[in-house]
Image (cartoon, rainbow, N blue to C red; front, side, top):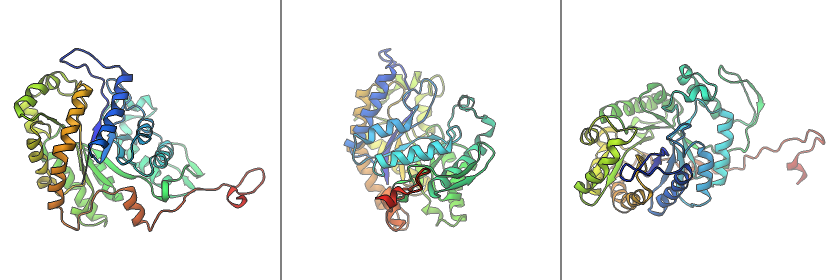
Amino acid sequence: MQFGIFTVGDVTPDPTTGRTPTEHERIKATVAIAKKAEEVGLDVFATGEHHNPPFAAPANPTVLLAHIAAQTERIVLSTATTLVTTNDPVRLAEDYAYLQHLADGRVDLMMGRGNTGPVYPWFGKDIRDGIPLAVENYALLRRLWTEEAVTWSGKHRTPLQGFTSTPRPLDGVPPFVWHGSIRSPEIAEQAAYYGDGFFHNNIFWPMSHTKQMVQLYRRRFEHYGHGRADQAIVGLGGQVFMRPRSQDAVREFRPYFDVAPVYGHGPSLEDFSRETPLTVGSPQQVIERYAAMADEVGDYQRQLFLIDHAGLPLTIVMEQLEMLGGEVVPELRRIAAARRPAHVPDAPTHASRVAVAGGGRDATVHAIDDVTGSSPEVAR
């Protein structure tokens, strides 16, 4: 099972000091957090994609992830999420294949529609087309990654005639795709149809809702013939704040919770912690709560935690990562491995997918020179 963190890149004032980081500081802090995640032994670092304040850091995930790839060696780099509705699929195909090469395959991505309605007109789209855009754009993206010459027409972009996206996916194997959704059954259906992963970012939702969405995806995964329902590839979101003593964790995190843009002035910390995955307490409390999630949704493959939000300063985020990597994840990893049946797969990686494909191949497309009529491949 993979464990990691995801960031939404919010630039939020620290309520205990009143200080707000600059965009430059937040972006640099995000890089430091990703490097620390690898250092403490986590498997995945993922970044959201937003185009509006206060979410300044992840406006361009491929730039951020390429920079992190150059400074790390092992950790898988992903998104949470990539806006498949407002990004052009040709741009996505080329950007993420390029990133795959730079990161030597340590890349997958999570498709999503996002939760900011105004982003649609900013990129020339209509929010009323959200689901159709997600369906059509992803269908084209898959073809761009798997077919050399794509002739295509659809409703939401101009047609393509014999178009080849470049560079081609590394080893001829595209990045693995997760479909992120909170409440749209159509997206769970889309993930199941293609046999892709389904990530339920349940950080604001009760487990009863998460269980319902995951079960729908699992049933449809089996319906489409990709394997048994319990072999479907599932990921979950999560939020934690830890101190050795639970009362210290609650006391320290409370001011961040009470005024954070996404929490403040709503349910109390206690109510929110009871109804959602937010766990504020000791590392042992986090272990017990997250180990039990598989009892609800079945054995799953990826658990991501949000730990750098609500104005928490970098020093505290680094302390959280130390506890996550040093105390929590090793125990959760042991528990997950012990309970997972042999027929339930682990999370796909580039290496495992290349092996399934029968080995890697150079997918470079050598074009005919329009002037000389010669091929660079022949000329070598």
